[in-house]
View: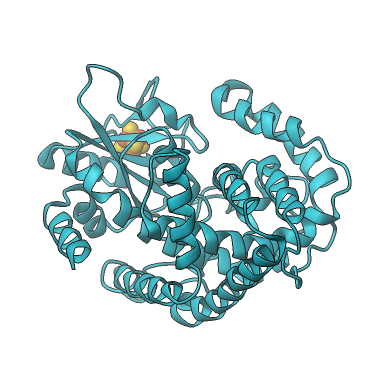
Length: 396
Ligand code: SF4
């Protein structure tokens, strides 16, 4: 079947094609960043440490945030600046509410879809050609990102960057923004060359479906551009490296799978609903979730099905409980945001991509069971030898 937007295992298993390629491209991006944006990421890290604004993370994570800023500016900057008036705070509030109150989520989603189409989305979004010329431009972008709900985690990180940027002289700020945006341009073209084989239909999907998604709350998640797909591929890889040691130390490990992996529909699935998600009851031998659950029984990890946009704070370790690590799985358009959210709640996480998107709620009229690369899952869930190799790389 033709992929909807992306596919990681079109030619061969993703563990032998996509994952090695993503690893190599991430190395290339980080190497190139050293000559361009990483010095700024280092200054930012020193600033955060000096003013004790957050527990310092790795330089690579901050470099990725800068790359993310450059890509999102190019993609959404002119859209954000064109919005003269919008209920930003109401939209941001609604996006939080739908996570906390799943029973009224469908109603909230209808309201969000209408408000977003009306206030946040021009009829024809255009690429932003200029670089941000002052801090106010970026502030506008960040407010817009937060209001969409889909970029909330990005916005939370950018707010701290805004504080740091406010300490720069205006001319220095413009110089740094030029470097960031030029790096994003290099990434766009390099990403298309290195990772484009895995995202063959993103452009056509966006072109053909823009009108269909216009009034929907998932319009930003489903109409992501090709460069954003490649950005999330690199983001997932950087996160897995950065969170690896903490995850490896966690005593209990749980694999979180999306409902769209089930062979049966939500109504026919016999899984048991718990406060944290749905526990597979093994009603269907061919169901992927069931097979991974049985693998977990043999290898000592738990498996849960969690609905899209569920409250991930439930996975943070409570006092007196064994440290909980998770391997989360989702499609490319939302994976990095999920990883950041887990990090914000202090949950040590690793992430594995769905091989392609296919749920009926967001992507496909009938939907089909999605899959992950089980070899990659095994590699992530029990990471003994990987932690040693990462440690050696860090020492080197
Ligand atoms: S095997 Fe498990 S996840 Fe699959 S449909 Fe049955 S209960 Fe649901």
